[in-house]
Picture 1 (spheres, rainbow, N blue to C red):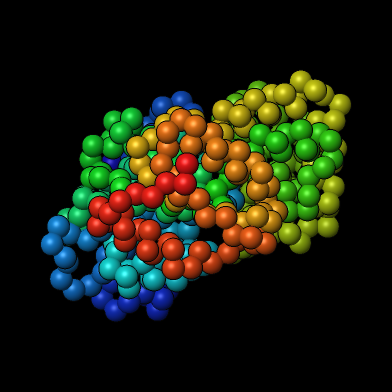
Picture 2: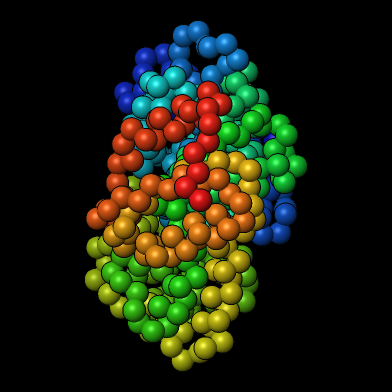
Length: 357
C-alpha cells in the first residue's frame, strides 16, 4: 500500500520556494509481532534541477510527541515545529522524508504506538525511505537518518536493522545515522520510579514509557505503575489534541511531582517486569556497519549522561563506528551547530569515517 496526498499549505512559508511536498501513507511492519501495518509521513524535495545521481536524502525521525493517533507530525500545521528544520535541510540541497511512526496518525488505522520499541521505529523509517523514493524518482541512492531523543534511538535502531530488514534492499545506501540526545537505554526508569527518585523531567516522561511498554508486553498494566492517574487521565497525557506535545502538556500538570513516586513500590515483580521490557528496548542491541554520530549533553535531565556513555561504550565494544560529541553543561535539547551538516555532508561524499571508539 502506498498512497499520497498534497502537503499542507501551512508548511509552505517555512520551506524554500518551489519545494515539492507530498504526504505519504505506506505499508510497514510492527516490530512487536511482525504484522503488517500502515504508517504516515511526508517527503520534501528541493525545486530546480537535481544533482547527478539524484537528491541525497535525509530521513528525519522525530522526537517524543505522544502516544495517541493525533500525535503524528505530518497531521499538524507546523509539524510540532519540525517544518523549520526540514526547510534548512532542503536549503542545503537535501530531499527529506519524515516518519510519523506506527500508531501516530489520524490518516490510517494501525496498532497503538509502542513507544521506544526499536524494531518498529527502524522498520517505519526504512519503509518511509522506500516510499519516498517510489514517489520521487529524483531522489538518489544515498541517505542518512537523523533524529533527536526518541528519534535518536530510532536513528540508531535504523542503523542496526538496515541490511537485516528485508525491505532495506529497496531503500538505497544508508551511509550514516545521527543520534541527538538519544534515549538508548531507559531501563533505569523502572527502579527509579519504584524508589521515588525520578527527577521532575523524568516524571513527565514516565507515563509514556509505561504505556509504550504495555503495548509491547500485554502483561504490563499501566494502572499498576500509575496508581494516581485514572484511565482518562492517562489517555489525556498520551494525546496531542490541544496542539501541544503530550510531553509539553504534562509539564503543567499539578500532580507531575507525584508521578512515579508510588509506582510499583509494593511489587518487586511489577518493577522487574517493566525493567525487563525496557531492557529489551535498549540500544545498542547488535553491531552495525553504518557510521553513527552521537551528540549528547552532559546535563541531560531526561537520560543521565552516564547512561548514554555506558551505551556508547557498549557500541564501541562490539565494533561500531561512533563519533561522540559531548556538550558540556547542556541538557536534553540543544542546537547541534555546524557539525550536523558537516558530518552528513562527509558521509554523502564518502569521506573517511572518524570513530572515537
